[in-house]
Length: 341
Ligand code: FES
Image (cartoon, rainbow, N blue to C red):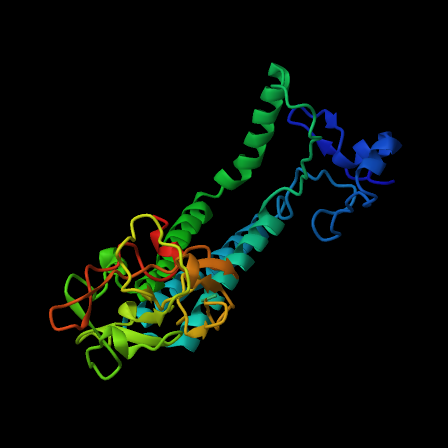
């Protein structure tokens, strides 16, 4: 094991054990390091044999100034890319241009940080064993605070870069938030509403009202609220179970007309139309991810990723014998994540 060539010196000039001395002194602990060799410093970071609390251009103010300017250039590039991105987005957006500007912005930010770390910050590596979970004693806490100050000092020494980084991070971060507007309006309560309501006639895809006798036993038909065929939220399946015994869930008594039941057609997993009906098993299957709903059990999911039953629509018959909904859906239709507030 190596690294006695890479000591670190404390503020009082006393040599401190480096992280690698840790490995050197105790072979048993090397094994605890999962067999990974101790870190070798990068040749370019700090010359071998040099105190690693020093930074690369410490003795050359001219080169340090040059490094500072290079970093500033990178970050100003990021700043301009961020402004360009925001402007491009606001004036209508152009995907390739926005992607290129984001790439330039992140690249400038990254290169600037790397240059700062390489040229203007000390190469000291600080490691500490995990130790016990007890509160450290006072001297250890003071040593930690001291080490932290030594880390912060070289950063605080460059207020120009520090402020520029804050400005660039703020502007670029703000610009990156602009696309949130593309998410559209908040849905608010609209997810909980459909065009169904008390006395709304049940119609087919031609907007023709239906009577209970229009659905044969074991038949299924996609139906809509009258004059609401375009309302995707409202699409519903009407199923005639005939004499098959089915469960009436609590609170849904009287929602069927004989064997005729109606359920939302929108899958509670991710919103696909649930249109495949197996009249032998009385199961509805969603073609997207094969969620299967048992119609005899109130369209309870029995297979697949859906975790919630299909909401049931309460049915009734009006004075002319046509099917109507006695009220709207009593729970949100569609994917279950809508009702996770
Ligand atoms: S959308 Fe129906 S199972 Fe995924």
